Image 1 (spheres, helix red, strand yellow):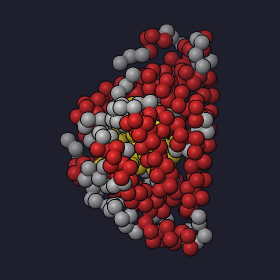
Image 2 (cartoon, one colour):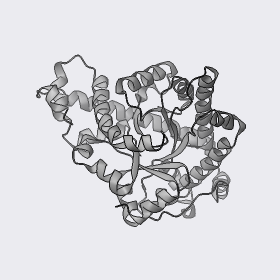
Image 3 (cartoon, rainbow, N blue to C red):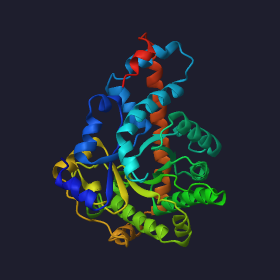
Image 4 (cartoon, rainbow, N blue to C red):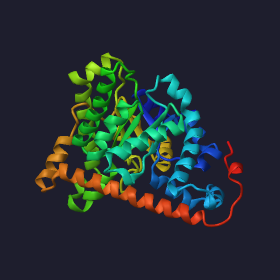
Length: 369
């Protein structure tokens, strides 16, 4: 039975996803519980999450150890393991995906972070992974870096759904939205189906982490929310643009805004700050498990965002007066985020290599439903 906070969120037409996936969640029934009790309708994952799962549990140890003598690279093995978990998760979300006509019920898999600046290989890997998975409700995560923007357009044009990641500003969002529309326009010109799913992921809490020491206390934990609200204004502008309306009339579905990095990092702030403050129709909040549980227990699902951005303009103006160049900082956060994912990826590859170095048991016995 869903809690009042989750019911209120649903009434405000916002989807709640969980920002985690691992085999233990699947084996224990935890993910199914989140769907049933908390109204979770999708999930996201990234190399950092998988690396954490490897370091903190033993669910993957035996299969990693067994593959030491097999002709699989560590990267190939990672994608096999990740896709197996995501295949199981996707089945849990499939009724939601079908029931919402593809507007919800998605799972996500990221291309290698090493490809963030390589358009051609990013597209190749996105198409390969989606074909390998064979899942209708799988989003391939591609970073909204300068090289990634072109890859997003090409991937959408090929009919592969995309979760655009590492967006930190309205400018980043507009580029992601334009890339989505470019891909759809290519399909429209060729008379192809325009129902290709996509979300644009705005990273929130990293803003407040980055500037906490540079702003007065009254601006603490307000900047990420202001950025989100300004992105929501840009989102509404896109949805009312002639360019989008032409595609919508031809059958395209909106590329929803997704709030990412919504776990509270400041112990002095509310543990549900980035859920309660980012409620808006036709958006998604992907929350870490700890935040998801906290919101179900004591969160409020009241409307908190308007199309005009609320007080975001005042907050961003205050930053400018302090000499903080918001667009430049957003670009830096994107670069830092891409580098952090590379670090996690390299650590993940090393962890896989280390765990494959000892003997195990037959690989077939480890893929249990």
